[in-house]
Image (cartoon, rainbow, N blue to C red):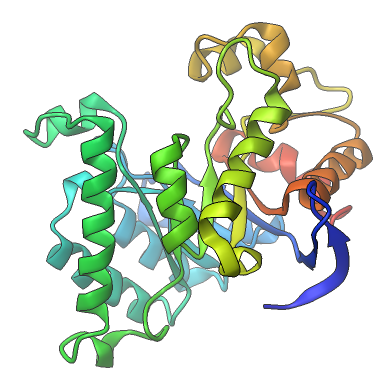
Amino acid sequence: MTYSSRSRSAHGKERGTRAFRFGVSLLATGSRSAWQRKARQAEDLGYDVLLVPDHLGMLAPFPALVSAAEVTSMRVGTFVLNSGLYRPAVMARDVADTDQLTDGRFELGLGAGYQDADFRAAGLPLPSRKQRVEQLARTIRQVRRLLTSADHRPMVRQKPHPPLMIAGRGARILGLAGREADIVGFPLDAGVKPGTEPERALAERAALVRREAGERADDLELNLLIAGVAVTPDEPDLPALRSFLPGLSDAEILRLPNVLIGSKRQIAEQLRHLREAYGISYFSVVEPHMAAFARVLAHLR
């Protein structure tokens, strides 16, 4: 881990300042040539990590990432796999081979699953939140054991296994992430509920993760998924934001720390503030915001 300077957290503890990383989550494939062209575009725009989500009816993450890695030098990752849809042995096989075929550039992102439609499409009942987090914890233990076993070790490029991201919004999954993950991801709504002060909600979740991580807290990389980007003179697309941030008022949406509005320099300062105050240094956007957010990256390198 490389530090560039020293800073203080919101609680006054001195810690290293991690370099920024920027990821983009691509949502569609099309032809092989179109997919690879899009991957090259993401790299040309300055992104560090190419990410793929995991929903049935969308592109299959593992082959898409291998294809993207063929034509770029970016790191690649799942953002995030629904662990409830995978047997640990199957996941370990796919993780090992994807890491091998991407020359050790793979990052494994896991979540507990949250869309009933994905479970229905797989012919599975939707477990309770508690059950999903417990299942995720079991999967992590078993996949790690398999990846470090004699059968898998010769295949894995990143010893003992690729970096693990765990993403989610609830206290159970964030506690698990603090204890087990290398990277912790906060979701589109940044954990905000109606009636709560947006940045305070994010601060509380970052503090929870650090408490659970204990002595390894400063080794964690914190990720925030960007919900919207509007670089002056553009205006935020409120109808689109409302569609995936239900329950929040327009005023609450516009105050979300991951809704970025302003000039390139103002947005850059907002992200520096999130790194300084809460240790969040890894920011990712979904494909519709790829070009807009790229306009800010030069101010953060």
